[in-house]
Image 1 (cartoon, rainbow, N blue to C red):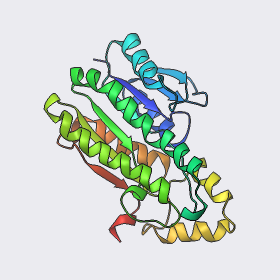
Image 2: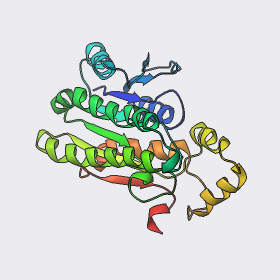
Image 3: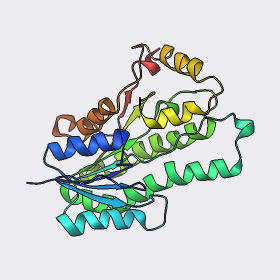
Image 4: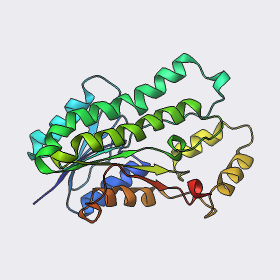
Length: 239
């Protein structure tokens, strides 16, 4: 039996690693991103802005129309913002929620009826910022806290239907995402040193380490897990 997945934020970083790991296991993957997604065996690329109305229905519908089923949704698309609260505008607030929260809700809403038919699962990408306080991340932390709580809510609501809903909460991950954020820092070297010192393993996670955790949460080996927020953070929240 061939399984089908939808992955958002699939063009690079964690999302691309998830796509590669899923296709290596035989999944057929509808890979959505606002940047072009590199094609490959088992991959159906879709260039789409997940924040746009109708995007969730279009992407989920493509998977079901093309493959006849949906077994997994990975909500990975997101944006980062590091900014003191007094310098954060209403536009910053709205823009971050429009990418980090509303699409997660919409994609879950679109996918859940199909996942109930296959007893499938959802894995959301949250963040340690949604679990603990981190300076200068007030709005970003709010968005990831919303993802954490939505994960728990849906896990309870859909457990009787056989749908599992979990999330990963990465710490700092060595991606272009972090490089872009650090480039805006007045002292990038000091910022990097602080980041590394806050992670007991002394380094950032790799995108593939986070991807492996996502794939695990979707696998039969984690069948007893739902409503779980799995920290992939090098020990950050254990301090």
